[in-house]
Image 1 (cartoon, one colour):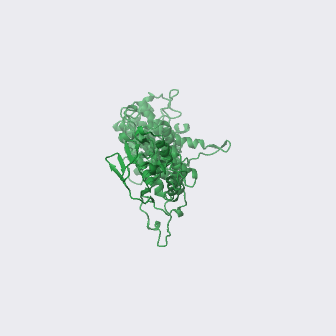
Image 2 (cartoon, rainbow, N blue to C red):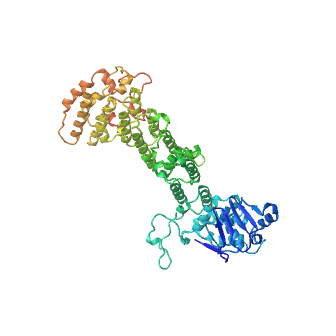
Image 3 (tube, one colour):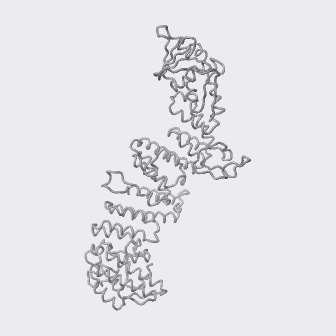
Length: 607
């Protein structure tokens, strides 16, 4: 730390009690200076020779006032005045980064300028600041920190602006010229230190300054970072690292989303300023950091503008997020005791989709492709499926929220529906009391043709699924297995055909039953045996359930008019009531896919 000593005489100031100072001298003191609760018993002559303000004040006093002068508004209070008084007496005083600003402001207030005496205190302090303090990285930061308690008088000599400019200039300097010490918690590599010739074999880290500036008070930090950004020499990723370091320093519970009750107001200010300082470029900060900011913003009830900005930024880089990131706890007392805030996640997903739509029309109206890559879209689809699985464990989650969120990403390609199937299964497991229409609604989200072999095996044995879904899974798995065997026109086992025959013009029964009939134990057992037999036959093993034995068992279960209409309806067979969608293939986006035909070949074309 830089320091400066002024004066050569010994320090003769003595303290009597807590608030009384006097000078030990043969001469009797003839003036009393009151600074707040403190009294200074001094001599007029030394003070008058250096201070223009004290000259005016002392001349204006009368003998009846007892020679007392009040200067309660002096910057820096009694401590700063003591240094100025000692300078007037020629006593030794030591100036450093901690007291130079308060002393400068006090001297400026006392009008200790060159017009009163050459080499006066204000001049000496100015030289010290410009030649020593502002040339030191850490001293500049210390000096700036000391200004937070100064009155507006400290702004008159533009000291704060000088401090800010000094710090911003050093933070923006070329890395090869950083030859001063700085704080950096990551352990330096050996090559980052100078060798015996004073040369570094490796440059200092780009974000070398971020932890030092994180010590600044929030208002000062904001001004410094704005100055750094305005210089335009620091990349946005480093600015982002600076904001992250500041959040970790000023919000002790940041990584855990916890704020102490006494720190709520302070935390709210920190979050709102960080949100305002975020670089506009995508990727300047990680999605995980943005999510943590949003969680904290919800906890401390930040303004809607700050939360809206964070939601927008998270949505722009949602593909980077994890399920854990999106599990944002609902604020206590809101939305019928739901565990997670699903509404805000829907807003985030909406922002992700909007940016793709905004990129479809560019260059004076010429239609372009969306700005999102297929890989990004696929990652978000998988993320949403996994998120749905987690929130489905909440017994208070409304079905509408589940369906709405799942449908938001239906416009993106979903090569596999395994993730969506897991989410649906978890919802059915947790919400066993949902109605038939609700069961139908959630199951229609899934396309059975896009389930993997393992998912199909699980679905066929899943007693929570409606019978119709189980049959569809069995049919598509059989078709896939037959196709993989190399047969161009594979033959369906007779029992599978029995599941897919039409009712030959017979009217369908109740359309709710058509979807939501849950398989009986016997029906599920027959279906599982059929699939096991089918898979064994395609691997060259002996069938455990013969086709001859399976057909009577399955037909016996499913040959009635009610069960046939319950399981499958063909295009030319069962006549549905007008407006019914109960004959659609589960999860199909193409109307043609949902229409079954009597042709075996037609069914094999579905893959």
